[in-house]
Image 1: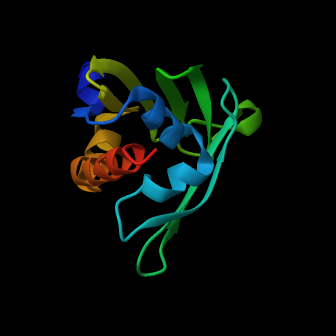
Image 2: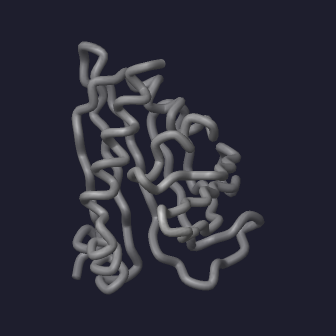
Image 3: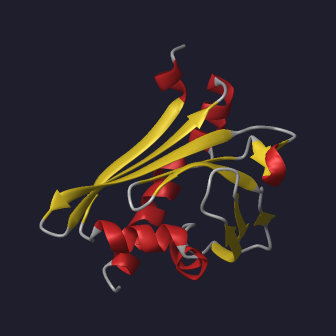
Length: 154
């Protein structure tokens, strides 16, 4: 299996400017409004936008479920790219179980639109399959709809 075969990818042309989408991804109060598909919601978001800085969201489900794994940013290209992983905790402490690394990119597409690519890269085919069965395409797709709608209001 090649590296790309362990990836799940969502690519869309969004009707919102790159700067607004960036704000929605990097300002905790905005991220909390769109990051997981409703009726799920984010009750807590922390981010330190630098390599090694913390990225954390606490996602809550409609039946009392709660999920939050701290991770770190690996790369931050202002306005263009965020790379983060759950393989490490803040302070570069290894996590108990690395699941994925995310690479999110924003490219100007003209006329106030943005080419948005979110790639989830997994350590194994099993982890990729697990993420796909969890509803990657539907869940990340709905969250992207929410991201676009929020960004259009900024």
